[in-house]
Every structure is written in structure tokens, then in C-alpha cells.
Amino acid sequence: MANILNNYDLSHNNTMALSCTARHAMMLDDIDTLGDNITTAIAFAKRHDLPLFVLSYGSNVILPSVLNALVLLPKIQGIEILQEDDECVTLQVACGENWHNFIKTCLDKGYFGLENLALIPGLVGACPVQNIGAYGVQVSDFITKVIAYDLTDGQKCEFGNTACQFEYRHSFFKDNARRYLISHVVFTLHKQPKTLTNYGDLASLAQEFANKNGRATPHPIDVFHAVIDIRNSKLPNPAVLANCGSFFQNPIIPMSEFIALKEQFADLPSYPINDDVIKIPAGWLIDKAGLKGKGVTPILTHDKQALVLTNHAPHTATQDDIRTAQEFIVRTVQDKFGVTLVREPVWVD
Ligand SMILES: Cc1cc2nc3c(=O)[nH]c(=O)nc-3n(C[C@H](O)[C@H](O)[C@H](O)COP(=O)(O)OP(=O)(O)OC[C@H]3O[C@@H](n4cnc5c(N)ncnc54)[C@H](O)[C@@H]3O)c2cc1C
Image 1 (cartoon, rainbow, N blue to C red):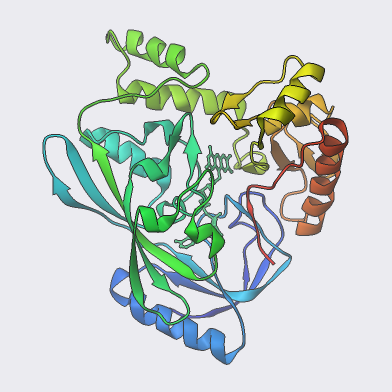
Image 2: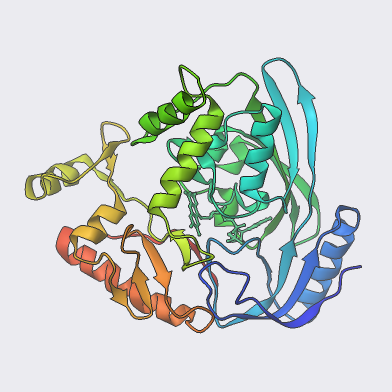
């Protein structure tokens, strides 16, 4: 049975490196005792009138100085083949597997589709929560099932793709962040090497890797390496400079609003969604508002990618510092463009 730990330091369990102590924490690293441990955790939380909170790698959370909860830390490992034919493979993957390493394993075995999502920090169990996406791919394109424990009663439950209610950086699990612990994610991947490279400069870089490897056209492995190169050149490594990736969602605005903005700012980039709405890059808005490399000390936007907030006082800065910087950036962008930025990472109270 897993121990319940007291006053557990989480400063090193969040990539924003915010100072945080959890009242209690429980490590979940054994699949055989997972159900029993969850039952114990629920009973403990009820007895102490505390909420439960699931923390994986901590790359998409803004933690408070004191997290008044029993924090569950899922570390369960394992990748199992459920079904396989010439076209597809279906894999059941445990929540504690590292996301990037899982993609690497898939490529080694000839399972394709996830390569555009390389180098996104985090564990597999968190990937459905905000429906992670990058370079034209969303993980929901490959998830066929999510297996979870309901933290209200400890019951095991399963969600098909539709029940997950996936949207852009959103899902049923993001709406119900404290209710479920996702123990496994089931993916169906291609065995034929299809690629998707119609996003930004990915096609040309993937072609360069293909040329180097003596291939006429890019293979998913070339796309994987191209994505890693692009991300390394644009995004700060959290191990070197604390951050939690994109801090704001790219706003999706009505077409009429976009046309009015475009008259004022001719170089405003855009990604059409449909005839009525269009996506514009939050990073561009922050940059053009004069905030690249700026913020409220110690929380500054990154000098290469204004969409990323960085913490220059690791393990000392707190959630309040993030709040102050966030409010300043949102207000400045709102005053200049009339667009309200919405935070992407989960704010934990
Ligand atoms: C440098 C950097 C780049 C990034 N780039 C991208 C990107 O390109 N695209 C993108 O979409 N995201 C990106 N992110 C955000 C982040 O990596 C993803 O959201 C990732 O899936 C979070 O995983 P995690 O394990 O760190 O989750 P955590 O931060 O630990 O948790 C995030 C949320 O999910 C919940 N949760 C976590 N695990 C479980 C579970 N097993 N069961 C139930 N709930 C759970 C938590 O309670 C919390 O609400 C980036 C982050 C960083 C730091």
C-alpha cells in the first residue's frame, strides 16, 4: 500500500519552478495496487476534508505556494499491444510513461502519427486533458479510449473518443480536472508511414532531413527530427529556463473582428477555422504590444517566443507573481488590440 506523505515539496515537480508544498502526497507506481490505493486516498481525503489533485510532470500547471490537497502522483509504466494488422496498431499506454519517449518507442517499432507532437513535455496520462497539439496534429486524432478512475467513488470507467469531448486544447477531463485519474490511454496508430507537414516551415525542414537520410520524400522519422529542431530553436528548455510552454491560447475571433483588425495591422497572421471564425497567434499580439522579453519581474515573456512566460526566480517565485505578470500582459494586449487573451495552463487553487 502506498504511503501518504506530509508537507511534500513540489517546487521540483512543476516546470514553471514555482515554490509549492502539498499538504499530502501519494505516489502511484504499481498497477496491481492502483485501485486499492485510490480507494485509500479517497477515504483519507474525505476524513480530512481535503480535495484530491492529480499531478503528472507539472508542465501545464500553475501551482499555489501551499496546495491544500492530497496530491496523487501517477508513475505507472507499461505499453501493451491490444490489436494489430497491416494498417494499424492499437496500444494501451500507462499514464506514467514519458510522452516524448513513448513517441520515440513508436517510431522505433514502425507506428506512426504522433511524430508532430515530439518534445512536448509531460506524461501520457495528461495528454488527453488539454488535447495536446502541435504542428497541425492533435492527440485526439489518435486516441480511441481513455481509462480512468472516478475520484468520487473509486470506480474504474472508460471513455470513447466522442465521450472525451475533445476540442482545441480542451476536453471533458479539463472541465472535470479534479474528478478523474486517467490510468491508461489507448491509441490507434498507422503502420504505413504517412506524414503531415503542412504547418509553417515543417515541410522544408523535414525534406532536409529526408535528403540527409537518402530519402526522396520525408518519412515520419524525418518529421520527428524536424519538429525537435524547430522546437529547440524556438522554445526555452524548462530544465534551463523555467516555463510551462504557451501561456495563452491562440484567440479564435469572429471574421468581422479580424477584418477590422487587419485594416489596422496589415501584417496580422491568421489561420482560418471556417467562414465565421479565424485563429490569430497570441504570441504575435504580445510581441506587437511591445512585450517580448518583458513582463513583471521575475516573470518575463521569452525573448524568442513571447507566448512563453519564463520564471527568473526558480523555486522562489510564486503563483502571485504569475498572476501579476498575466494581468499586465492581458491588459496591455486588450488595450492595443481589443482581444482578450485566455490562459492555457491549469490554475490550481
Ligand atoms: C516547453 C513546453 C512546451 C509545451 N508545448 C506544448 C505544445 O506544443 N502543445 C501542447 O498542447 N502543450 C504543450 N505544453 C503543455 C504541456 O506539456 C502539456 O499540456 C502536457 O500534456 C502536460 O503534461 P503533464 O504530465 O506535465 O501534466 P501536468 O502539468 O502535471 O497536469 C496538467 C493537468 O492535467 C491533469 N492531469 C495530469 N495527469 C493526469 C492524469 N493521469 N489523470 C487525470 N488528470 C491528469 C492535472 O490535474 C492538470 O490539471 C508545453 C509545455 C512546456 C513546458
